Length: 106
Length: 106
DNA sequence: TTGACATGCAGGTATTTACCTGCATATTAT
DNA sequence: ATAATATGCAGGTAAATACCTGCATGTCAA
Image 1 (cartoon, rainbow over the protein chains, first blue to last red):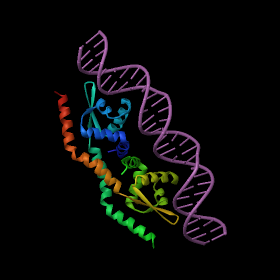
Image 2: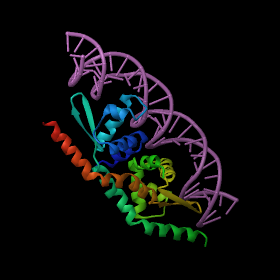
Image 3: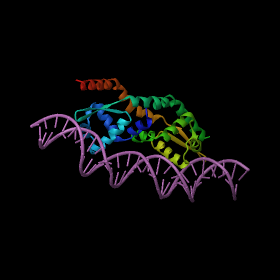
Image 4: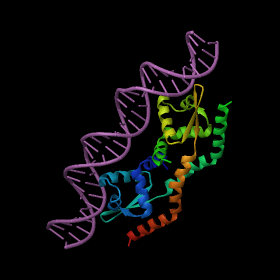
């Protein structure tokens, strides 16, 4: 998993919209996705290229069409690497912050 | 939660390193963090500003020092909004993809 | 109170990003 | 074969990003 590519891919509203669109209906063509985007098809392609580079979307050519599918694995890995670690320390960290802030008053 | 700010903040190795440093030892000063970064202090400040804007880090002034604390809440919200949704559909989506690919061969 | 220390603020630059337009290619349908 | 359709490829531009340097401000300690 390339955390950089995954987070950068997710750090754009157009690309998150694309993932949401594919969540609603998987396997859509480029044209179908573009209907919901309000930008030139070529621009959408560039966004999709980044999603593919982050391995968040896989594509399959069918004739002249390109079908797009979500790959949830990198998001799962992001969760394992980043979220769980923070979750585990969540209460501890909040406790530290509270103590530090209280220390300020004394 | 501003997904854009959170993901953009996470989409940079220096900022993820900062979060890891704070995970190791919460409440570090700017100077302490900079010792581990290999860039000008002013550059590190700009990264920290983005982490603060994304609400991933909170700071407290103590005398001439600035202490930094992790806030795990936005990561939790990112998880709720983005990861769980995809996890839920994980097997279904892989099944869809498998079927689509098999359909290609026929 | 003066010097050392920790941080803030103001710019400047090179790279990356997010768009676009124009044209080329490949596939399907008539 | 030809026209319509779906996508690919090659550039060009404006804005955002990630660095930097230089100087200002505020705090502590001798």
